[in-house]
Amino acid sequence: MKFFIDTANLNEIREAQALGVLDGVTTNPSLMAKEGITGKDNIMRHYKAICDIVDGDVSAEVISVDFEGMVREGEELVEIDEKIVVKIPMIREGIKALKYFSGKGIRTNCTLIFSPGQALVAAKAGATYISPFVGRLDDISTDGIALIEQILTIYRNYGFDTQVLAASVRHPMHIIQCAEVGADVMTGPLSAIEALLKHPLTDIGLEKFLSDYNKGNA
Image 1: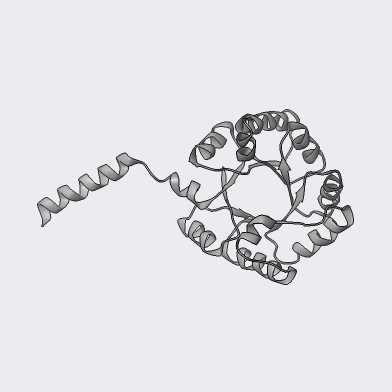
Image 2: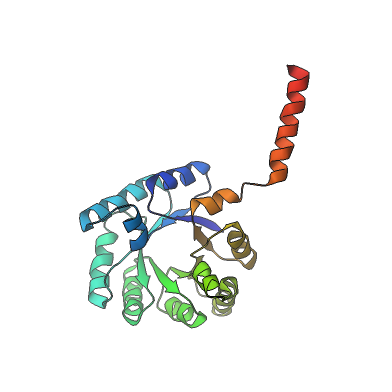
């Protein structure tokens, strides 16, 4: 499973990259706003800064909700860097844009997926990735992991190449559950990735090893 980090914070991206397990980055307008990145030129420069840090794909989201606007923005985004994947919302015009970009060989990420039907249509339109939102479904007492599993079953049935990118991952158990059902990618905060490293018995064991070493080598 690929690990993406869901942020626009350059320091967090650098830290995840230094950890050695980062495969890519996802962003969205909310994450950009959180970092105070506003204005088209600043946003475009920020995407380039992210691409300069990571080795893998960087999802950059369009703002337009009409076909022509999404195409125009997407074509501008892919000029930034070859790592850019155009992030398109799951709406009628977005499906048209996915099909257009697929025909042009431009990679896409269809976002805001909340049902297997949406995932099926996005795959038929040629999406490179689809992003089902695990955490947001859990927030309304719906099983987000079950949706990931259902989509994977459908994709396997018909041999779709579209990768399932589990989004809105909130904590380490989401990551483990996504891995158990076979998600191609997960994207979440640095804190969730770092939490995978931690276990109290590891800390206790290391403390014991060091204590015993120091007793014999003081």
